Length: 188
Image (cartoon, rainbow, N blue to C red; front, side):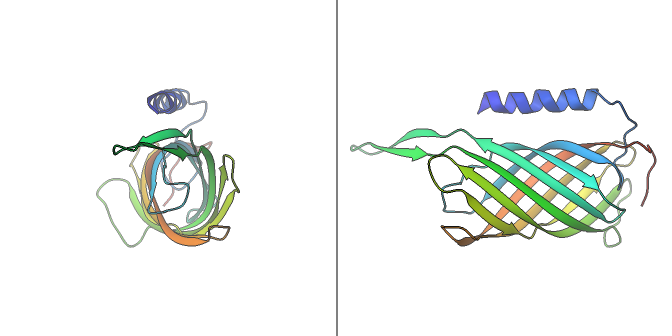
């Protein structure tokens, strides 16, 4: 896990340091970064490590986002005098959302704070078992720093797993993205 986290942090630092285009944190351009997720699921996928996050603005109020993460499972010994081996499956998670932003509800001294809601899907490719498909409705807040090309987001997503095992859960994430923009300006 620490090796994966180190790779993600190094990749993020390199992406931030390499900027072939002008950057902007406002509602334009494409951003890449990292996110940390969690879930209340009781299914096979209960580990949500650090993942890569991306966002592309389609207009000043609409954007598409994506996230990918993976977990390398293993065998864990579960306690007591009679030790049992429990398999923790490896998986690869991909999700995408279409978001609608509202900048009018919350004002901040510097930058922009938007509330958002959207619709999306999530595919989980599991080791040695059937893959999973889920529909999600992310609701969150996105804080875009004033002149810095960075946003910070937090979201909760009611999620309906439509494949076996079918079920309803809540996923959550917190993260940041660094934005690249050809225009270099800002919009509201």
